[in-house]
Image (cartoon, rainbow, N blue to C red; front, side):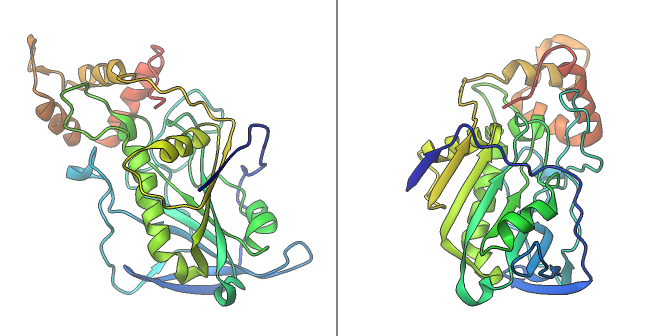
Length: 308
């Protein structure tokens, strides 16, 4: 594997999507059929591009699957509409001036921009991990036209996955922890498996996957690159401006603060009797995700950030 560290690269990828088309594109993956759309070529686009948005790569992490490892997606009947973005993963922060407009806990989807000529020649893949300190930004914040003109219309397939953020992706109950740590990173691994198994349906070569991330997206890629239990699901990596500080139990205080504010730390009103970690997680799973993200915002105002 070739690992390239790029610390000065800045990509202007973020803005309001501006590309529309009425031409249909179709693809079939293991779970079922997809209908996207085609953006035709013009003076700014060398080739036509097939766009598929909101493709599920894991079961919705809701109910009993909240705070669980990503679970393989089940098959669907009929044709899945893949022409619009799905909601971003929940976030609520003062760190950015323009937060995501539509969010939902059901958010494990990815978006694909594929050069139409790739169906004949099998193109390399650029897999982009968004930044945001692991508690804001999303896979739906990118500028479609920029991606299409600069990458996807030039013999490249772009894949942008979502991953769980904040307390949903990085809850940490300490040493006695029934919740797998770094669920957001596990989501990325799950989406990379999906790419290996399914990208051929869009004209991609699974042996030529480049993973790229800026800021904390670069940090995520650095973690993946050194994780001992993660198989090699890519051929090269570009890491831009990462923050690679790794601290064990960093998020335990944030988790304890969430548990207390949610009424899930103690047994009833008895502050001398702490619930077992299993009961704490069970309690959190019963609460509405909007209530939990509101609590996350409350503790952020107390300088307790769920920043991975």
